[in-house]
Image 1: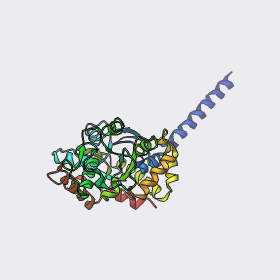
Image 2 (image 1 turned 90 degrees about the horizontal axis):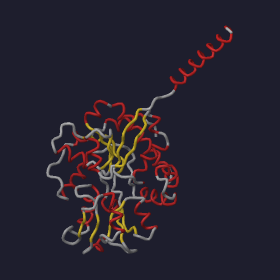
Image 3 (image 1 turned 30 degrees about the horizontal axis):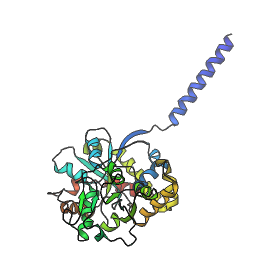
Image 4 (image 1 turned 90 degrees about the vertical axis):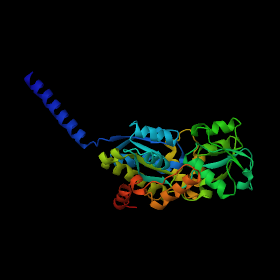
Length: 335
């Protein structure tokens, strides 16, 4: 009986030691709450980083939510509902100019062009921006980068919003496609894969890339409260590392490979549509090759904001942007 008891105790001890060693070898992930402005193939490097395990390699577990608008993303960041926001840098400029002490700091950039496409009700094989004269366009929320970039493009092509063309900025970002298919407006600007899905369903036709017409602009970036960045420098660095790995991966792979990699983030979208969209974004050079938001890029964004009448005072680049994490990622991660 004693020998049997001793044997049971020995087995229990060995099992405990085994579990202890297993626990020591397992890397515990740190959860980071990330809120994105919308869910789009436009942000492929981020979804690649998730699918390829780049965040996990850095010891991070990403809890991703959809804010459905830059203003809502910023609200979530400032109210501590999330740790990191992903939206247009204009949101950080607005908050800083309001004089908020614990304002948002941008630490990594993902896209460098407007990712939306102009969608019309009919095919226009010889489309020209002048075709929009006298028409109504659903163009995004007033004060948001999509609406301001569209206004910039219209003016560039000799069309003055409110005079030559009606720009509807009253429709919420997430409701724009539904408003258009419901009969509102003559044209709408939509992100992918929504634009291509509408085209496939015969409810609209992709006519032009707003991003190609507008040129390069810091369109979407990652930011966090100044206090969060200061207290969690290691997390911000690891997050930026993962994003940079995603950018490098996308740069080196074909649209077909990108589409396959991001499929888990778009389970209800056909892979052929994902390929088409990834090819479009690759061709227009929409994705940044590194995560640094440069000074001249922010200056251009602020020029666009001033032109749209949404900015009276320019913000200091060094207050809004912190590039040290992006630079370190580029120094330590081999291409």
